Image (cartoon, rainbow, N blue to C red; front, top):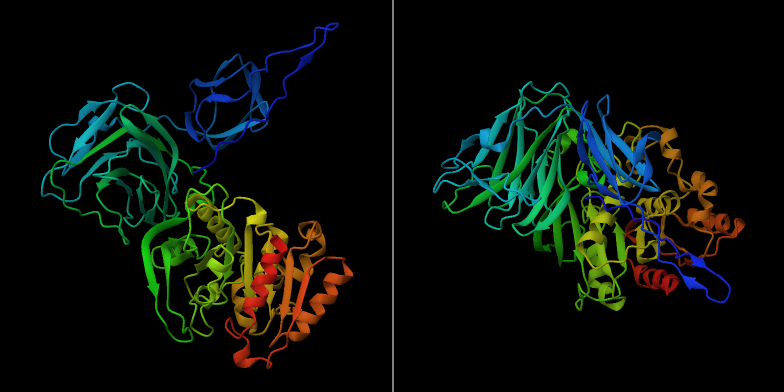
Length: 553
Protein backbone atom coordinates (compact mmCIF):
# COMPACT_ATOMS: atom_id res chain seq x y z
CA UNK A 1 0.00 0.00 0.00
CA UNK A 2 1.43 3.35 -0.98
CA UNK A 3 1.96 5.98 1.62
CA UNK A 4 0.24 9.23 0.66
CA UNK A 5 2.65 11.96 -0.41
CA UNK A 6 3.13 14.65 2.17
CA UNK A 7 2.33 18.22 1.28
CA UNK A 8 5.13 20.67 2.04
CA UNK A 9 4.60 22.75 5.15
CA UNK A 10 3.96 26.44 4.58
CA UNK A 11 5.28 29.03 6.98
CA UNK A 12 2.68 31.65 7.99
CA UNK A 13 3.30 35.01 6.31
CA UNK A 14 4.01 38.11 8.42
CA UNK A 15 2.75 41.60 7.64
CA UNK A 16 4.12 44.69 9.36
CA UNK A 17 2.28 48.03 9.29
CA UNK A 18 3.96 50.56 11.54
CA UNK A 19 3.97 49.18 15.07
CA UNK A 20 0.92 47.00 14.50
CA UNK A 21 2.63 43.97 13.04
CA UNK A 22 0.33 40.97 13.09
CA UNK A 23 0.42 37.40 11.84
CA UNK A 24 -1.78 36.57 8.92
CA UNK A 25 -3.66 33.30 8.75
CA UNK A 26 -1.63 30.52 7.17
CA UNK A 27 -2.62 29.91 3.56
CA UNK A 28 -4.42 26.70 2.77
CA UNK A 29 -2.06 23.83 1.98
CA UNK A 30 -2.40 22.75 -1.63
CA UNK A 31 -3.34 19.12 -2.10
CA UNK A 32 -5.59 16.83 -4.12
CA UNK A 33 -8.98 16.00 -2.65
CA UNK A 34 -10.10 14.01 -5.68
CA UNK A 35 -9.21 11.50 -7.07
CA UNK A 36 -7.62 9.11 -4.60
CA UNK A 37 -4.16 7.85 -5.38
CA UNK A 38 -4.17 4.97 -7.89
CA UNK A 39 -7.67 5.67 -9.15
CA UNK A 40 -8.76 4.38 -12.53
CA UNK A 41 -9.92 7.06 -14.99
CA UNK A 42 -11.84 6.38 -18.20
CA UNK A 43 -10.52 7.25 -21.65
CA UNK A 44 -12.62 9.66 -23.71
CA UNK A 45 -14.87 10.99 -20.94
CA UNK A 46 -14.57 13.75 -18.36
CA UNK A 47 -12.83 12.72 -15.12
CA UNK A 48 -13.00 15.01 -12.10
CA UNK A 49 -9.86 16.40 -10.45
CA UNK A 50 -10.29 18.59 -7.37
CA UNK A 51 -7.66 20.45 -5.36
CA UNK A 52 -7.85 22.51 -2.19
CA UNK A 53 -7.19 25.74 -4.09
CA UNK A 54 -6.74 26.98 -7.65
CA UNK A 55 -3.72 25.52 -9.39
CA UNK A 56 -2.42 24.23 -12.70
CA UNK A 57 -2.53 20.43 -12.97
CA UNK A 58 -0.14 18.44 -15.13
CA UNK A 59 -0.31 14.85 -16.39
CA UNK A 60 3.16 13.35 -16.90
CA UNK A 61 4.55 16.88 -16.99
CA UNK A 62 2.08 18.31 -19.53
CA UNK A 63 -0.50 20.88 -18.41
CA UNK A 64 -4.09 19.64 -18.65
CA UNK A 65 -5.71 22.80 -17.27
CA UNK A 66 -6.42 24.68 -14.06
CA UNK A 67 -8.33 23.20 -11.15
CA UNK A 68 -10.33 26.09 -9.67
CA UNK A 69 -10.64 24.06 -7.54
CA UNK A 70 -12.23 21.47 -9.90
CA UNK A 71 -11.04 20.40 -13.33
CA UNK A 72 -12.74 18.02 -15.74
CA UNK A 73 -10.06 16.13 -17.67
CA UNK A 74 -10.85 14.06 -20.77
CA UNK A 75 -7.80 11.90 -21.56
CA UNK A 76 -7.63 10.80 -25.20
CA UNK A 77 -5.59 7.62 -24.84
CA UNK A 78 -5.07 4.76 -22.42
CA UNK A 79 -2.10 5.01 -20.11
CA UNK A 80 -1.96 2.91 -16.97
CA UNK A 81 0.74 4.88 -15.13
CA UNK A 82 0.00 8.62 -15.26
CA UNK A 83 1.47 11.04 -12.73
CA UNK A 84 -0.83 13.94 -11.87
CA UNK A 85 0.96 16.89 -10.28
CA UNK A 86 -0.28 20.11 -8.68
CA UNK A 87 1.82 22.49 -6.61
CA UNK A 88 4.42 19.89 -5.70
CA UNK A 89 1.86 17.19 -4.86
CA UNK A 90 1.64 14.09 -7.02
CA UNK A 91 -0.52 11.01 -7.33
CA UNK A 92 -0.81 8.17 -9.81
CA UNK A 93 -3.85 7.31 -11.92
CA UNK A 94 -4.53 4.78 -14.66
CA UNK A 95 -6.46 5.76 -17.77
CA UNK A 96 -8.35 2.65 -18.89
CA UNK A 97 -11.01 1.59 -21.33
CA UNK A 98 -14.72 2.03 -20.59
CA UNK A 99 -15.70 -0.49 -17.93
CA UNK A 100 -16.21 -3.89 -19.55
CA UNK A 101 -17.87 -5.56 -16.59
CA UNK A 102 -21.36 -5.00 -15.20
CA UNK A 103 -22.42 -4.16 -11.65
CA UNK A 104 -22.34 -6.97 -9.09
CA UNK A 105 -26.11 -7.59 -9.10
CA UNK A 106 -25.63 -8.92 -12.65
CA UNK A 107 -22.89 -11.42 -11.72
CA UNK A 108 -23.41 -15.18 -11.65
CA UNK A 109 -23.54 -16.63 -8.13
CA UNK A 110 -22.11 -19.93 -6.91
CA UNK A 111 -22.83 -21.04 -3.31
CA UNK A 112 -24.27 -17.61 -2.53
CA UNK A 113 -27.99 -18.18 -2.01
CA UNK A 114 -30.69 -15.83 -3.23
CA UNK A 115 -30.40 -12.52 -5.02
CA UNK A 116 -27.95 -9.95 -3.61
CA UNK A 117 -29.35 -7.10 -1.53
CA UNK A 118 -28.44 -3.43 -1.88
CA UNK A 119 -26.48 -2.14 1.14
CA UNK A 120 -24.49 0.93 2.18
CA UNK A 121 -21.41 1.63 0.08
CA UNK A 122 -18.15 3.35 1.13
CA UNK A 123 -19.34 6.77 -0.11
CA UNK A 124 -22.58 7.07 1.85
CA UNK A 125 -24.92 5.70 -0.81
CA UNK A 126 -26.63 2.31 -1.08
CA UNK A 127 -24.99 1.03 -4.24
CA UNK A 128 -23.02 -1.85 -2.71
CA UNK A 129 -24.26 -5.43 -2.97
CA UNK A 130 -24.39 -8.07 -0.23
CA UNK A 131 -24.03 -11.76 -1.03
CA UNK A 132 -24.96 -14.32 1.66
CA UNK A 133 -23.24 -17.68 1.83
CA UNK A 134 -25.17 -20.90 1.34
CA UNK A 135 -24.94 -23.20 4.37
CA UNK A 136 -22.82 -26.35 3.99
CA UNK A 137 -21.75 -25.29 0.50
CA UNK A 138 -18.23 -24.59 -0.70
CA UNK A 139 -16.51 -22.45 -3.35
CA UNK A 140 -18.46 -19.29 -2.63
CA UNK A 141 -17.89 -17.01 -5.58
CA UNK A 142 -19.42 -14.60 -8.03
CA UNK A 143 -18.25 -14.29 -11.63
CA UNK A 144 -18.83 -12.20 -14.70
CA UNK A 145 -17.73 -12.42 -18.33
CA UNK A 146 -15.98 -9.34 -19.68
CA UNK A 147 -17.53 -7.81 -22.78
CA UNK A 148 -15.44 -7.63 -24.81
CA UNK A 149 -12.70 -9.79 -23.32
CA UNK A 150 -9.38 -8.20 -22.51
CA UNK A 151 -6.64 -7.89 -25.10
CA UNK A 152 -3.69 -7.32 -22.71
CA UNK A 153 -2.11 -10.40 -21.14
CA UNK A 154 -1.44 -8.80 -17.75
CA UNK A 155 -4.82 -7.10 -17.53
CA UNK A 156 -6.22 -5.97 -14.19
CA UNK A 157 -9.34 -5.53 -12.10
CA UNK A 158 -10.51 -3.35 -9.21
CA UNK A 159 -13.26 -3.61 -6.62
CA UNK A 160 -14.22 -2.39 -3.14
CA UNK A 161 -14.85 -5.00 -0.42
CA UNK A 162 -16.08 -4.42 3.12
CA UNK A 163 -14.04 -6.13 5.82
CA UNK A 164 -16.08 -8.87 7.50
CA UNK A 165 -14.31 -11.00 10.14
CA UNK A 166 -16.62 -13.90 9.26
CA UNK A 167 -15.40 -13.84 5.63
CA UNK A 168 -12.18 -11.77 5.72
CA UNK A 169 -10.37 -13.29 2.76
CA UNK A 170 -11.02 -12.28 -0.85
CA UNK A 171 -9.58 -14.12 -3.85
CA UNK A 172 -9.54 -12.73 -7.39
CA UNK A 173 -9.51 -15.48 -10.01
CA UNK A 174 -9.63 -14.53 -13.71
CA UNK A 175 -9.85 -17.08 -16.48
CA UNK A 176 -9.06 -17.47 -20.17
CA UNK A 177 -7.14 -20.64 -21.08
CA UNK A 178 -5.05 -20.42 -17.92
CA UNK A 179 -6.37 -21.13 -14.43
CA UNK A 180 -3.16 -20.72 -12.42
CA UNK A 181 -3.12 -16.92 -12.16
CA UNK A 182 -4.89 -15.83 -8.99
CA UNK A 183 -4.26 -14.15 -5.66
CA UNK A 184 -6.02 -14.10 -2.29
CA UNK A 185 -5.70 -11.46 0.44
CA UNK A 186 -6.79 -11.25 4.07
CA UNK A 187 -8.10 -7.71 4.04
CA UNK A 188 -7.79 -7.45 7.82
CA UNK A 189 -4.09 -8.36 8.12
CA UNK A 190 -2.85 -7.72 4.58
CA UNK A 191 -1.40 -11.25 4.30
CA UNK A 192 -1.71 -12.66 0.78
CA UNK A 193 -0.92 -15.74 -1.26
CA UNK A 194 -1.15 -16.23 -5.00
CA UNK A 195 0.21 -17.67 -8.22
CA UNK A 196 1.64 -15.48 -10.98
CA UNK A 197 -0.58 -12.56 -9.93
CA UNK A 198 -0.62 -9.48 -7.70
CA UNK A 199 -3.37 -8.21 -5.39
CA UNK A 200 -3.16 -5.35 -2.91
CA UNK A 201 -5.12 -2.78 -0.94
CA UNK A 202 -4.74 0.67 -2.52
CA UNK A 203 -7.26 2.59 -0.39
CA UNK A 204 -9.12 2.21 2.91
CA UNK A 205 -12.28 4.05 3.95
CA UNK A 206 -13.69 3.97 7.48
CA UNK A 207 -17.40 4.78 7.29
CA UNK A 208 -20.54 4.05 9.29
CA UNK A 209 -21.11 0.76 7.47
CA UNK A 210 -17.63 -0.50 8.35
CA UNK A 211 -14.12 -0.66 6.92
CA UNK A 212 -13.96 -0.75 3.15
CA UNK A 213 -10.88 -1.73 1.15
CA UNK A 214 -10.27 -0.90 -2.49
CA UNK A 215 -8.42 -3.82 -4.05
CA UNK A 216 -6.47 -3.88 -7.29
CA UNK A 217 -5.47 -7.06 -9.08
CA UNK A 218 -3.29 -7.82 -12.08
CA UNK A 219 -2.17 -10.99 -13.83
CA UNK A 220 1.56 -11.54 -13.94
CA UNK A 221 2.36 -14.55 -16.09
CA UNK A 222 2.25 -12.55 -19.29
CA UNK A 223 0.70 -15.29 -21.42
CA UNK A 224 -3.08 -14.95 -21.33
CA UNK A 225 -5.84 -12.37 -21.58
CA UNK A 226 -8.94 -12.35 -19.36
CA UNK A 227 -12.40 -13.47 -20.42
CA UNK A 228 -14.06 -13.87 -17.00
CA UNK A 229 -13.38 -12.46 -13.53
CA UNK A 230 -14.25 -14.40 -10.39
CA UNK A 231 -14.38 -13.04 -6.83
CA UNK A 232 -14.31 -15.58 -3.99
CA UNK A 233 -15.21 -15.07 -0.34
CA UNK A 234 -13.14 -17.20 2.06
CA UNK A 235 -12.94 -17.74 5.80
CA UNK A 236 -9.21 -18.51 6.01
CA UNK A 237 -6.08 -17.79 4.01
CA UNK A 238 -4.06 -20.91 3.26
CA UNK A 239 -0.97 -21.74 1.23
CA UNK A 240 -1.66 -23.00 -1.35
CA UNK A 241 -4.96 -21.13 -1.56
CA UNK A 242 -8.02 -23.30 -0.92
CA UNK A 243 -11.07 -21.97 -2.74
CA UNK A 244 -13.35 -24.73 -1.46
CA UNK A 245 -14.28 -23.70 2.09
CA UNK A 246 -17.55 -24.66 3.75
CA UNK A 247 -19.69 -21.93 5.35
CA UNK A 248 -22.50 -22.07 7.91
CA UNK A 249 -24.82 -19.78 5.95
CA UNK A 250 -24.50 -16.58 7.99
CA UNK A 251 -21.39 -15.19 6.31
CA UNK A 252 -21.77 -12.24 3.96
CA UNK A 253 -19.60 -10.50 1.38
CA UNK A 254 -20.29 -6.82 0.59
CA UNK A 255 -18.79 -5.59 -2.69
CA UNK A 256 -18.93 -2.35 -4.64
CA UNK A 257 -17.88 -0.84 -7.98
CA UNK A 258 -16.25 -3.56 -10.07
CA UNK A 259 -13.90 -2.11 -12.70
CA UNK A 260 -12.01 -3.71 -15.57
CA UNK A 261 -8.54 -2.49 -16.54
CA UNK A 262 -7.26 -3.83 -19.85
CA UNK A 263 -3.69 -2.85 -19.11
CA UNK A 264 -0.90 -3.33 -16.60
CA UNK A 265 -1.83 -1.53 -13.38
CA UNK A 266 1.19 0.18 -11.74
CA UNK A 267 1.94 -2.04 -8.78
CA UNK A 268 4.90 -0.99 -6.65
CA UNK A 269 7.72 -3.38 -5.78
CA UNK A 270 6.30 -3.71 -2.27
CA UNK A 271 2.82 -4.52 -3.62
CA UNK A 272 4.32 -7.65 -5.16
CA UNK A 273 5.58 -9.13 -1.89
CA UNK A 274 3.25 -11.89 -0.72
CA UNK A 275 3.40 -12.93 2.93
CA UNK A 276 1.47 -15.37 5.11
CA UNK A 277 1.91 -15.44 8.88
CA UNK A 278 2.90 -18.85 10.24
CA UNK A 279 2.86 -17.60 13.83
CA UNK A 280 5.65 -18.57 16.20
CA UNK A 281 7.69 -21.50 14.95
CA UNK A 282 10.57 -23.47 16.43
CA UNK A 283 13.54 -23.75 14.10
CA UNK A 284 15.11 -27.15 14.83
CA UNK A 285 18.74 -28.18 14.88
CA UNK A 286 19.62 -29.51 11.44
CA UNK A 287 22.79 -30.18 9.49
CA UNK A 288 25.37 -27.65 10.58
CA UNK A 289 22.95 -25.76 12.83
CA UNK A 290 23.12 -26.72 16.52
CA UNK A 291 20.87 -23.81 17.55
CA UNK A 292 17.16 -24.47 18.00
CA UNK A 293 15.21 -21.27 18.55
CA UNK A 294 11.76 -19.71 18.34
CA UNK A 295 10.91 -16.94 15.93
CA UNK A 296 7.93 -15.27 14.31
CA UNK A 297 7.73 -16.47 10.72
CA UNK A 298 6.03 -15.34 7.54
CA UNK A 299 6.06 -17.44 4.43
CA UNK A 300 7.08 -15.17 1.57
CA UNK A 301 6.77 -15.22 -2.19
CA UNK A 302 8.17 -12.53 -4.44
CA UNK A 303 9.23 -12.09 -8.07
CA UNK A 304 12.35 -10.43 -6.66
CA UNK A 305 13.78 -13.30 -4.62
CA UNK A 306 13.08 -15.77 -7.40
CA UNK A 307 11.81 -15.37 -10.91
CA UNK A 308 8.10 -14.69 -11.45
CA UNK A 309 7.44 -18.05 -13.10
CA UNK A 310 8.69 -19.88 -10.00
CA UNK A 311 6.37 -18.04 -7.62
CA UNK A 312 3.93 -20.94 -7.72
CA UNK A 313 6.56 -23.33 -6.35
CA UNK A 314 9.26 -21.53 -4.40
CA UNK A 315 8.57 -19.99 -1.02
CA UNK A 316 10.96 -18.20 1.29
CA UNK A 317 10.71 -17.11 4.91
CA UNK A 318 10.83 -13.86 6.82
CA UNK A 319 11.97 -14.70 10.36
CA UNK A 320 11.90 -12.26 13.29
CA UNK A 321 13.09 -12.43 16.91
CA UNK A 322 12.02 -9.58 19.20
CA UNK A 323 13.36 -8.65 22.64
CA UNK A 324 11.65 -10.37 25.56
CA UNK A 325 10.35 -6.97 26.69
CA UNK A 326 9.21 -5.88 23.21
CA UNK A 327 6.51 -3.22 23.41
CA UNK A 328 4.55 -2.56 20.22
CA UNK A 329 3.39 0.78 21.64
CA UNK A 330 6.72 2.06 22.94
CA UNK A 331 7.27 5.71 22.07
CA UNK A 332 10.81 5.15 20.87
CA UNK A 333 10.90 2.62 18.00
CA UNK A 334 13.34 -0.28 18.09
CA UNK A 335 16.35 -0.62 15.84
CA UNK A 336 16.47 -3.69 13.60
CA UNK A 337 19.54 -5.84 13.00
CA UNK A 338 19.24 -7.58 9.62
CA UNK A 339 21.15 -10.86 9.67
CA UNK A 340 22.27 -11.50 6.09
CA UNK A 341 22.50 -15.25 5.68
CA UNK A 342 25.20 -16.66 3.44
CA UNK A 343 23.21 -19.55 1.97
CA UNK A 344 19.64 -20.30 0.85
CA UNK A 345 19.00 -22.78 3.65
CA UNK A 346 20.75 -21.62 6.83
CA UNK A 347 22.35 -24.50 8.70
CA UNK A 348 23.29 -26.48 5.59
CA UNK A 349 27.00 -25.73 5.11
CA UNK A 350 27.31 -23.09 7.84
CA UNK A 351 25.51 -22.54 11.11
CA UNK A 352 22.28 -20.53 11.27
CA UNK A 353 23.21 -16.86 11.72
CA UNK A 354 19.91 -15.82 13.28
CA UNK A 355 19.87 -18.87 15.54
CA UNK A 356 23.39 -18.18 16.73
CA UNK A 357 22.69 -14.54 17.53
CA UNK A 358 19.52 -15.57 19.38
CA UNK A 359 21.61 -18.02 21.43
CA UNK A 360 23.93 -15.12 22.33
CA UNK A 361 20.87 -13.17 23.56
CA UNK A 362 21.75 -10.29 21.21
CA UNK A 363 18.10 -9.24 20.96
CA UNK A 364 17.96 -8.63 24.72
CA UNK A 365 21.52 -7.41 25.32
CA UNK A 366 21.12 -4.68 22.70
CA UNK A 367 17.30 -4.35 22.88
CA UNK A 368 17.06 -4.86 19.14
CA UNK A 369 14.78 -6.71 16.74
CA UNK A 370 16.58 -9.44 14.80
CA UNK A 371 15.38 -10.22 11.28
CA UNK A 372 16.44 -12.34 8.34
CA UNK A 373 15.05 -13.48 5.02
CA UNK A 374 15.51 -17.01 3.76
CA UNK A 375 15.73 -17.13 -0.02
CA UNK A 376 14.10 -19.99 -1.90
CA UNK A 377 15.38 -21.63 -5.04
CA UNK A 378 18.58 -23.23 -6.26
CA UNK A 379 22.24 -22.24 -6.23
CA UNK A 380 21.40 -19.87 -9.08
CA UNK A 381 19.64 -17.71 -6.52
CA UNK A 382 22.17 -18.12 -3.71
CA UNK A 383 22.12 -14.79 -1.87
CA UNK A 384 24.53 -12.19 -3.18
CA UNK A 385 22.07 -9.34 -2.43
CA UNK A 386 22.35 -7.83 -5.91
CA UNK A 387 20.40 -8.69 -9.04
CA UNK A 388 20.74 -10.61 -12.28
CA UNK A 389 20.93 -8.74 -15.54
CA UNK A 390 17.83 -10.42 -16.99
CA UNK A 391 15.68 -9.31 -14.05
CA UNK A 392 14.76 -12.82 -12.93
CA UNK A 393 16.41 -12.43 -9.52
CA UNK A 394 16.57 -9.06 -7.75
CA UNK A 395 17.65 -9.59 -4.16
CA UNK A 396 18.39 -5.91 -3.57
CA UNK A 397 14.73 -5.08 -4.27
CA UNK A 398 13.59 -7.96 -2.08
CA UNK A 399 15.71 -6.61 0.78
CA UNK A 400 14.14 -3.15 0.39
CA UNK A 401 10.71 -4.81 0.51
CA UNK A 402 11.74 -6.75 3.61
CA UNK A 403 12.78 -3.52 5.35
CA UNK A 404 9.41 -1.97 4.45
CA UNK A 405 7.65 -5.08 5.77
CA UNK A 406 9.48 -4.83 9.09
CA UNK A 407 8.61 -1.16 9.48
CA UNK A 408 4.95 -1.84 8.63
CA UNK A 409 4.55 -4.80 10.99
CA UNK A 410 6.74 -3.89 13.98
CA UNK A 411 7.51 -0.88 16.12
CA UNK A 412 10.70 -0.38 14.15
CA UNK A 413 12.45 2.87 13.39
CA UNK A 414 11.98 4.05 9.83
CA UNK A 415 15.21 6.00 9.49
CA UNK A 416 18.42 4.72 8.02
CA UNK A 417 20.19 4.90 11.37
CA UNK A 418 17.71 2.44 12.89
CA UNK A 419 18.70 -0.23 10.36
CA UNK A 420 21.83 -2.28 10.91
CA UNK A 421 23.16 -5.26 8.95
CA UNK A 422 25.56 -8.07 9.79
CA UNK A 423 27.12 -10.35 7.21
CA UNK A 424 30.06 -12.65 6.81
CA UNK A 425 31.75 -14.03 3.73
CA UNK A 426 29.66 -13.16 0.65
CA UNK A 427 26.77 -11.81 2.73
CA UNK A 428 29.23 -9.25 4.10
CA UNK A 429 29.99 -8.36 0.47
CA UNK A 430 26.24 -7.92 -0.04
CA UNK A 431 25.90 -5.79 3.11
CA UNK A 432 28.56 -3.38 1.85
CA UNK A 433 26.94 -3.22 -1.58
CA UNK A 434 23.51 -2.39 -0.09
CA UNK A 435 25.07 0.21 2.21
CA UNK A 436 26.73 1.97 -0.71
CA UNK A 437 24.20 1.72 -3.54
CA UNK A 438 20.83 1.89 -1.82
CA UNK A 439 21.73 3.42 1.55
CA UNK A 440 19.34 0.81 2.85
CA UNK A 441 21.24 0.42 6.11
CA UNK A 442 22.77 2.97 8.42
CA UNK A 443 25.49 0.73 9.81
CA UNK A 444 27.00 -2.58 8.75
CA UNK A 445 29.49 -5.07 10.08
CA UNK A 446 31.27 -7.52 7.81
CA UNK A 447 33.48 -10.40 8.84
CA UNK A 448 35.89 -12.48 6.72
CA UNK A 449 34.53 -11.06 3.47
CA UNK A 450 36.01 -11.73 -0.01
CA UNK A 451 36.31 -8.09 -1.05
CA UNK A 452 39.03 -8.81 -3.61
CA UNK A 453 37.06 -11.51 -5.41
CA UNK A 454 36.98 -11.25 -9.18
CA UNK A 455 34.36 -12.61 -11.54
CA UNK A 456 34.61 -16.15 -12.86
CA UNK A 457 35.30 -19.66 -11.71
CA UNK A 458 33.18 -21.28 -9.01
CA UNK A 459 33.30 -18.35 -6.60
CA UNK A 460 30.32 -19.43 -4.54
CA UNK A 461 27.61 -19.08 -7.17
CA UNK A 462 28.29 -15.50 -8.28
CA UNK A 463 28.55 -16.43 -11.98
CA UNK A 464 25.12 -18.09 -12.05
CA UNK A 465 23.67 -15.34 -9.84
CA UNK A 466 24.85 -12.25 -11.74
CA UNK A 467 24.98 -13.77 -15.22
CA UNK A 468 27.81 -11.55 -16.50
CA UNK A 469 30.91 -9.76 -15.32
CA UNK A 470 29.35 -6.40 -16.22
CA UNK A 471 26.42 -7.11 -13.91
CA UNK A 472 28.73 -8.33 -11.15
CA UNK A 473 30.71 -5.09 -11.33
CA UNK A 474 27.52 -3.02 -10.88
CA UNK A 475 27.31 -4.39 -7.31
CA UNK A 476 30.95 -5.08 -6.46
CA UNK A 477 31.82 -2.85 -3.46
CA UNK A 478 35.34 -2.22 -4.73
CA UNK A 479 34.16 -0.87 -8.10
CA UNK A 480 31.16 1.13 -6.86
CA UNK A 481 32.69 2.58 -3.71
CA UNK A 482 34.05 5.87 -5.01
CA UNK A 483 30.92 6.90 -6.90
CA UNK A 484 28.84 6.14 -3.78
CA UNK A 485 31.29 7.46 -1.19
CA UNK A 486 28.72 9.99 0.09
CA UNK A 487 26.85 7.03 1.59
CA UNK A 488 29.60 6.45 4.13
CA UNK A 489 31.74 9.57 4.56
CA UNK A 490 29.40 11.54 6.85
CA UNK A 491 30.18 9.52 9.99
CA UNK A 492 31.49 6.07 10.98
CA UNK A 493 29.13 3.46 9.52
CA UNK A 494 31.32 0.40 8.96
CA UNK A 495 32.77 -2.31 11.17
CA UNK A 496 35.41 -4.16 9.15
CA UNK A 497 36.36 -7.40 10.86
CA UNK A 498 38.14 -10.69 10.20
CA UNK A 499 39.55 -13.11 9.58
CA UNK A 500 39.81 -16.78 8.71
CA UNK A 501 39.69 -17.56 5.01
CA UNK A 502 39.88 -14.01 3.63
CA UNK A 503 42.40 -12.26 5.86
CA UNK A 504 44.25 -10.79 2.86
CA UNK A 505 40.96 -9.26 1.67
CA UNK A 506 40.28 -7.80 5.12
CA UNK A 507 43.72 -6.18 5.33
CA UNK A 508 43.40 -4.81 1.79
CA UNK A 509 39.96 -3.36 2.55
CA UNK A 510 41.33 -1.64 5.64
CA UNK A 511 43.95 0.10 3.47
CA UNK A 512 41.28 0.92 0.88
CA UNK A 513 39.06 2.66 3.47
CA UNK A 514 41.97 4.52 5.04
CA UNK A 515 43.14 5.80 1.66
CA UNK A 516 39.73 7.42 1.21
CA UNK A 517 39.54 8.85 4.71
CA UNK A 518 36.54 6.71 5.69
CA UNK A 519 36.21 6.57 9.46
CA UNK A 520 35.36 3.04 10.58
CA UNK A 521 35.99 0.39 13.23
CA UNK A 522 38.62 -2.23 12.42
CA UNK A 523 38.68 -5.55 14.29
CA UNK A 524 41.22 -8.04 13.02
CA UNK A 525 41.56 -11.22 15.01
CA UNK A 526 42.94 -13.99 12.81
CA UNK A 527 41.42 -17.37 13.53
CA UNK A 528 42.90 -20.71 12.53
CA UNK A 529 42.63 -20.00 8.84
CA UNK A 530 39.71 -21.20 6.78
CA UNK A 531 37.83 -24.45 7.11
CA UNK A 532 35.71 -24.66 10.23
CA UNK A 533 36.71 -21.16 11.35
CA UNK A 534 34.87 -19.56 8.42
CA UNK A 535 31.41 -19.67 10.04
CA UNK A 536 28.97 -17.70 12.13
CA UNK A 537 29.71 -19.36 15.46
CA UNK A 538 33.50 -19.37 15.72
CA UNK A 539 33.69 -16.71 18.41
CA UNK A 540 33.94 -13.47 16.44
CA UNK A 541 30.28 -12.37 16.56
CA UNK A 542 29.94 -10.96 20.13
CA UNK A 543 32.71 -8.37 19.72
CA UNK A 544 31.70 -7.47 16.17
CA UNK A 545 28.04 -6.98 17.12
CA UNK A 546 29.03 -4.84 20.11
CA UNK A 547 31.25 -2.71 17.87
CA UNK A 548 28.36 -2.32 15.43
CA UNK A 549 26.03 -0.98 18.10
CA UNK A 550 28.79 1.28 19.44
CA UNK A 551 28.70 3.09 16.09
CA UNK A 552 25.02 3.82 16.58
CA UNK A 553 25.34 4.97 20.18
